[in-house]
Image (cartoon, rainbow, N blue to C red; front, top):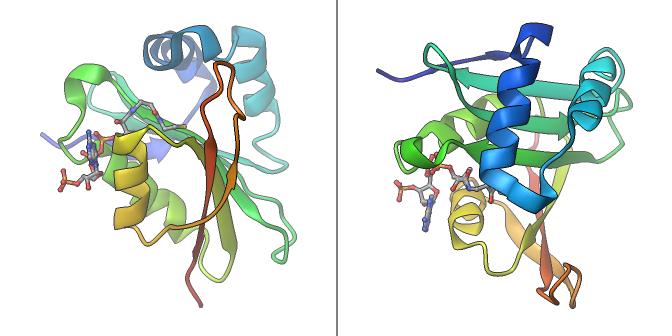
Length: 149
Ligand SMILES: CC(C)(COP(=O)(O)OP(=O)(O)OC[C@H]1O[C@@H](n2cnc3c(N)ncnc32)[C@H](O)[C@@H]1OP(=O)(O)O)[C@@H](O)C(=O)NCCC(=O)NCCS
């Protein structure tokens, strides 16, 4: 059964912290950092979760209220056992529905083939690169998406 994509609520916080740890390990956001994202929901954040009884994926957008301002995909992840079943695509579809007419940027490790494959499939184009950006020296690739209204 395909998960439901819905806005995150405060009760999702523990599940998000736990799943982020599984997906990002040393670079996972702390509970405090996640709580901060939730506090910004009324300001400039969108947090969506994929819910199939439990949280199996999520996406976090920085979506400033000023339409000329750039949107950023801050995070997207799917539980390891659920990957390659379309959930990342479901999350990104719903997220990008909020972004019509806006420019969306993201930054991804150059070797992250799954994420780059996902983004490219949605029409994100590689526009720039930050050499040696990540600890360990991996490059960051900057990708941009824009769909006119
Ligand atoms: C990136 C990520 C969110 C993709 O989620 P997912 O649910 O597996 O993605 P989907 O099943 O919707 O895949 C959609 C498309 O993305 C591309 N894709 C996904 N995984 C891929 C892989 N391992 N290799 C190449 N392309 C891949 C494919 O084009 C795929 O379409 P297809 O299955 O029809 O070929 C997931 O791999 C993940 O959580 N990775 C760890 C966290 C991370 O690196 N996040 C991004 C940085 S913030």
